[in-house]
Image (cartoon, rainbow, N blue to C red; front, top):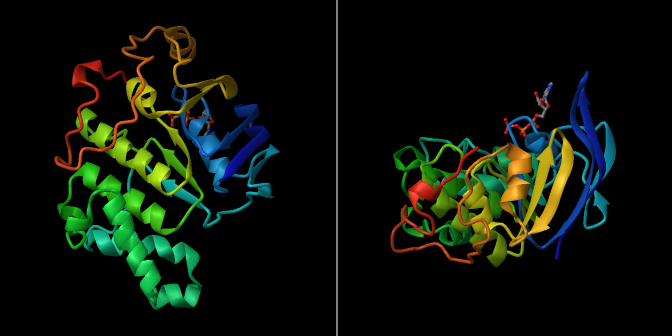
Length: 269
Ligand SMILES: Nc1ncnc2c1ncn2[C@@H]1O[C@H](COP(=O)(O)OP(=O)(O)OP(=O)(O)O)[C@@H](O)[C@H]1O
């Protein structure tokens, strides 16, 4: 069980109010953060993972203040930042460096349990057979799955992802999201993921937090995300299948093709 509590969080940059008095609590859920460009999503994730200092308010994980970067918090970025010339396995193993001492990190002394965890994490994202393939030879979707495996090796209780599928085609984006959700579920990790694609969000989120101009606009469960709420958040965009709910698992038979939504159903904002 892990509980993230965001309480009265505000962040200003000079005259710009990026976040204004935002509060919510997440416990063992897979939550999607929605909002227009500039709504404050990245600032929210950066305040939670300690990369940005809030102006006021607090963030706690299981009752402990989350100040500075912590190994309990795994982060997945839009650009996976893998070491291109080395294998998926070594990239995943890099995640354990957040848990080891500086000297051990410098000497690359990871123990057997960390190596086993790297392989298990690659298995979770369906890439065990590709463990020795160089990152540079993998597709964008596969690289992002290695990024997920790397975050899992850290053994986090909270997984944050900032636009993890923004640079992928719709089919690969679905696949990566399916693996990300599966990883959170199988490892009992609370997930908070910012997304631009409303339909992908509707597909995978247990709950949705909408930010508008830095303020909390809605906080609703799956099934309560109505077109009106989306219109209020983004203006009038066409949204398809918002009430549909799926707990589909990734299709391991075909790496890059999981078809819960047709490409023409995709809504990006
Ligand atoms: N380091 C910074 N310095 C000054 N202003 C900033 C900084 N970071 C963010 N902002 C401003 O804060 C507001 C929120 O930005 P943020 O990046 O959190 O939004 P976002 O919802 O993640 O947008 P996007 O989807 O485009 O990434 C914006 O007005 C942005 O210009």
